[in-house]
Length: 268
Image 1 (cartoon, rainbow, N blue to C red):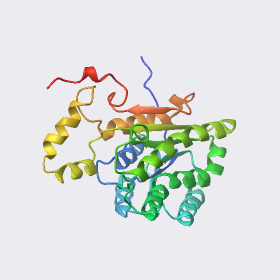
Image 2 (cartoon, rainbow, N blue to C red):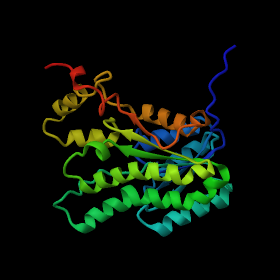
Image 3 (spheres, rainbow, N blue to C red):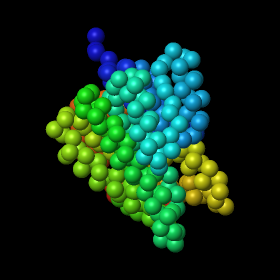
Image 4 (cartoon, one colour):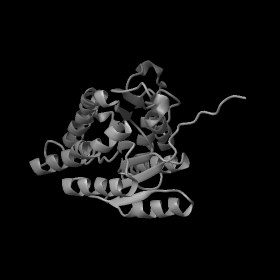
């Protein structure tokens, strides 16, 4: 009889920022999949939707926690991590997932640019900094959720692009820093994923359906967008012991969107 693959995530305390996104968002999907594996997801997010998610999981016999946190405020981040330490006495994994493509471009103010950096990159630094004593004890790992924008640019979103480029560099930097503590650090790169927020954006466009089809046509593998559950599945595998010798990596979950030959695309 073949052995069933076990991710060994049961009872692991997993911090996830931005886990209170809309139903079907990347963060919410990761939280749900963690719970299915028996892990203990800790949602760190300012949106009170997270409380409803946690209540639902706990009513089903799971163990989850929501901490309302403004991730641009260092003292709130420190307080959130302290609360987790007090309740569980351990932190096994940190998933830095929060992110908003806020359109803080060159025409925006310095304040808008700095605000984008605070949410999309500085929060990653602070969460990692304050979780680190716990991760050293557990020999846990860190997963950053990145974006193709850090590689390709997008236009009109300098703050987000700078942040996501910084997250790529910090992933490698922290992997070097933390290898002495047996802490792995990786980054998942997302390209075109059909989340609720993406759907809302498409609906604001006059030619939304046409634009959506045009984007799908440019994705080599299956000419379709990446589903949030595919990102969640890769997340769980990467943070699990099955990825025990993977660190400092930028892992693309994008159907070949960034790297594969454009000659693969359909001719219209």
